[in-house]
Length: 357
Image (cartoon, rainbow, N blue to C red):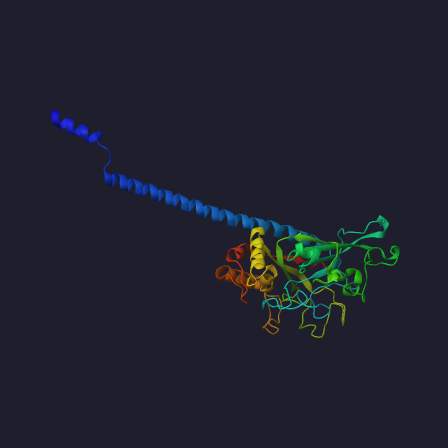
């Protein structure tokens, strides 16, 4: 009996066997690996979430600003608008890329219209001379030289304060030009040339432009008509097949437009920097506007004849381009883009109601 008790005590005081130690170490390593993997995944999710938070915040700011401008738009048939139409507009981004690479066209649209919002005025003008109307314009800056280089590939907004016709003598580039009526057009006024130009020419520069979307690199808009059609002309081409502009041969204005749809592509700052660094180091890589030019215009004739477009179609195409680049690391036109940078791009659309016309 005594010997049995001694043996039992010896067994209780004995250490772990080698097999038990190996199993314990294996379990510990496995738990450590699983914990590290969870931390890695959590970090990746956090980075992605932060990128989306950055782009969401910027998109909200830009689209809210546009909402104010469109809501206060001066809606009349005796004034001009620099908008997409059949004539008197040099195309989407002043040229059509239709998602076929840059080829002289960098992609984004331009728009200019009169609105009841505060604008910028030169010094020295009295309150009595300043009207409550501004010329508002939006564009993605395409100039990469001189002082404009730091605005390259960024969404800009201009709000140029206008004067009262009877109180402004000899209006010019340095004075608040008065609002004008048709047949005078925005494109014919030298003081407003920056509202319709967008390149390295001096006519594209205007101190009243300010960067409103530093990471918005693609800007496109189209029209939802009151009859339900979606088009890049602000009237129904079947009802008015001979119409050239909103004022010729008859003054339609925007009376057939229910809403203007605006689509923007936004990239987070780190991804933008990655694209520009790669483009600077290697000519095989495209820059931010090479990427923008791959996103097709909203145009019925981009290889589709006059076929009907639908809401969301251009955004769907943009997302397809982005997903392709994120998977392959190059654009459809064989320009290289860092795959990780493409993952930091998001597409947003908002509809601005004009039915009160």
